[in-house]
Length: 536
Ligand code: GLN
Image (cartoon, rainbow, N blue to C red):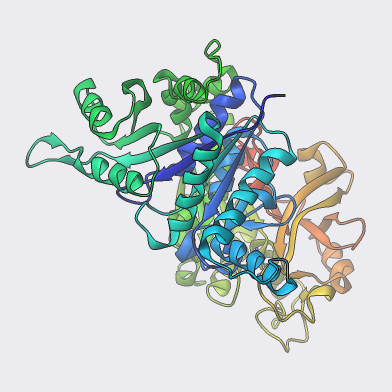
């Protein structure tokens, strides 16, 4: 087997250029050429993982099958490539330092002075190489969070410099930059890119490939100029124009030969272009899907990225139902019994979003009440499912004080309770019930019908659970507990069979929905929402 090759993706000029999408696209293209690949993210912040971060800080927290709370870019990696990521695919400065400090305390360094270079940089390199060696990948794509010039990213850049020096053609740097268009001058400007590349060169890294983000098409003269000023081959300067969908990016990169340029730079033979058949079929279907389905997201974070995987899951499910999913965010803090009808008006289906803490939960309960009593397709995810359960307990079972122990420590009707193993936890980071667990579906239920199998695996991120003491009462009154964990007996899914679609899952199905394998629950929920348009 050939030795692993390393592609380092860095970004310059400004943040939010879409390094995650470019990394995912490269992964997709190399995979389509038959290479065994993985994508890893290094985040320069001090948090051990993003699990404790407020979504306003850093968007959604994505969870891997093995229970790591990670950056949302890992969601892109999985949605594009279909490959499951693990703990080893996500690293932060905090984890690197912790590991070095733990080693120092153990005495592993034999009395040496511990320094950023070489100890921190060695630990970074070790984590990058470990991934390649352990799973025999042909390519490890490592995306470095942040922007070149940030103080925090310096040790990562030094690690890249060293790896390039040690591995020669087996390590390359792809730098993503921005070409702004100045309207007043009517010109596209290359200077910020030149400066950003200079910054890389000043720490000893010569980029091998440049991807130029731009809102306007770049003619060859601009690419030539960038190539000449930045010491990069002309065919290694590609542009990434704004496209209608992020899923168009791999095809655009293929058309410009980005994958071929990478292979040439690494000294690999460049075979025929991959066909990307199923991927193109998806894009075709997406383009043709003009009829709209309207889904309301009831949540508390008014930020696109906060519910990223749910949005993508809904979008993918729309395409496979030949519809364009139009998502409207509905702030649960603004919902009251008096305005809920008006606020949810026009929506064909409602998702009640995950979350933590008190803020906005009463609005979620109001939404669950309205959609249940008006028979609007409703999908409750994690906290959303818990709010469906509380609403049912309050308004059907008649327990007006029903609540979750998370919100009310004293209620006599704790229909959502803290999980046994969570009771004595004081450390908040990485201690929830995390990752993939098995769930057994009840034969004859709606979810069994949707999944068409009895045993499923889904990913979790929670501390609270359905209180089994109430199960019989719920079932007698029409809310069924149709999915449970075979070992812990935790209720994982509730549904109300008589309604069009009223399903709550304790797990997060959105983490498993990919472009080529959309999630069955999202597919069925969107399908039912479309059917709901007819008889609204
Ligand atoms: N706060 C709830 C719990 O911890 C729900 C978590 C979530 O929505 N991810 O159980």
